[in-house]
Length: 429
Image (cartoon, rainbow, N blue to C red; front, side, top):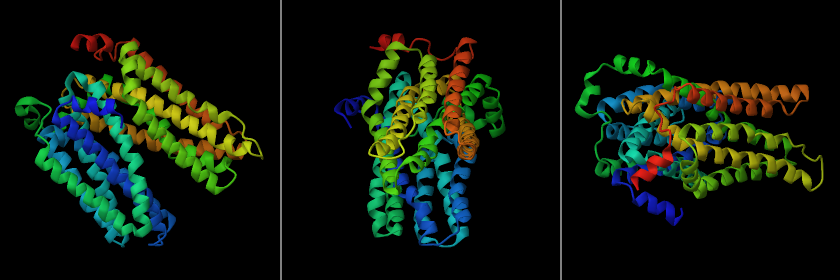
């Protein structure tokens, strides 16, 4: 990481610094193991394809389905207990994935892995928003850097460990979470979003009714769901496009690795600069709108025809997908800090973790539906001989989401969000 990024990190309180380090470590441990789990299940354990899909899907189902509960518990009992509980549970679950061979045991471990994420994810974001105060946007920009750094480093370490033994990968990953648990117990201060314990006296049903009655928040969440569908295509549509267009499997693997590497490095090197420029020149609403439009436009390079043969085929196969991934990374850099800040603002800084939890659940459902439709579009493009169908559909989705946020901004649904971030930033200097 650059010296400027580290200087920014040091300018925050210890709790924010720990939360940033925690997110890096969480992703390090997670991506050290998860990219290699399917290979372990289908290879060493010789499970059928549908069982592998079921076990992997159980993690996603558990995490997305329990985000709201995790956020609610964080608002009731404080952020630290939920962060610690999630890390303890993931320690146990990751160790079990390497030690258990039975399908019921693997399903339970996978579900526990997802539930652990549902416990600490809303709590971490709400805690960061609380302690960053008026510097939330900058804090979430740093958060995204640490997030991406963990995604980049985790698979490299996991690959080296898995070449020795997948069980070793699981145990090392579990040890990472165990150490993280100890560090948080000893060093992370207690924190609660609502002073005076008012949330703790309310019933869970009342908490949920308050969040579900927040119409501007729900409209914002629905409008942003498409952005998660689009960004997820670096795991689905883009690798498939590379495999279809590349001259051989090796070229497809190189292209996919380049795609992830370019996206991650761009975020690490450019996030703070992009956020600073956006704050100087745009409102929060405009930054999100432009970012969503860019997300849609990111898929246009994939409309370029790939040469049928010759040296241009490799470049023609790789360049559009890598460029798409880079543009998606830039769009995410633009959107993410303002998106996280807007959620806090629309929550009126109350029940923030519950709002984050519901937001994640809504977007998770959207990702599932969007991926099904994207997969159908990819299949239809092969059947009909219209390769542009999925890419034009994804572009249209991005533009539709941008239009929705623009309309919400114009009709006042996002009026509570800061209208001139640059001015408010200048006033704090």
